[in-house]
Amino acid sequence: MDVDRLAEKLIATRRSLDRLAALAPDEIPANAAEAYAVQDAILKRLGVPIAGWKAGASSPTAEPQAGPILADRMQPSPARFAMPAKAFRTVEGEIAFTVGRDLPARSQAYSEDEVWEAMATLHVGIEVLESSFIDRRKLSEYAVLGDLLNNGAYCCGTPLKDWRAIDVATPAASIWIDGKEVRRAKAGTPGGHPKRLLTWLANHAAMRGLPLKAGMIITTGSHTGMLDAPPGATVEARFDNIGSATLTFTA
Image 1 (cartoon, helix red, strand yellow):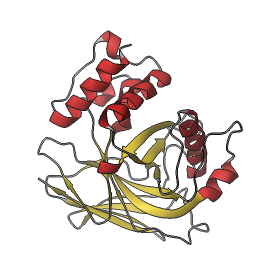
Image 2: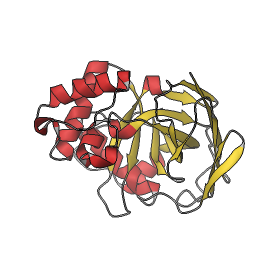
Image 3: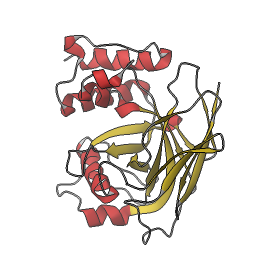
Image 4: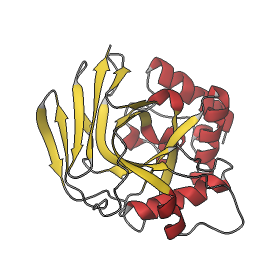
């Protein structure tokens, strides 16, 4: 496939929001490796530092997938994101972790215990999803993966330092839009326990030459599912015993 052509097309589409209905046959990644090559080409062209990563999976046994969150798309709560009228403004309530120490590339894979101990703080997060495609469900999963795995922006709540006794697998969570609760959930994420996703990501990122570094924010999948917010809305995610995060969409 033509990695560079797809990377340039996805960048242009994200900027214009003139979304694509389909891709040419030679622009469709055939596998995860080609999709990550597209991500890498986007990162090279944009030149924006990576502030964090998103990792998720469709089930507790499925191969996870990862996407970088760029520094210009990450804000602390209370965040304000300027979004044009045709932006999706699709939000998810999540929990995230701050990496406490660098996890550089090495010959031996990182274990779950090593990665878990390397996480310093816990946060409530709100991911804002965006896409280069009119309907990403009609595109190959690897085209979506190459499109930075749908990340549009991320809002990160206040760090919680004393978190290791908290249930991070199935915490009670809710999403509020303009002061009204619109979703409550307590089933966790499709990908299972965040420890599995964090460990996979640490090894994946190191092998790609983009290792996790102290201070990065790692989010581990949606607890609330996707919800669409209207223009100008204020969105809050609340997680019992963890905290909350708030963002407002501006024009």
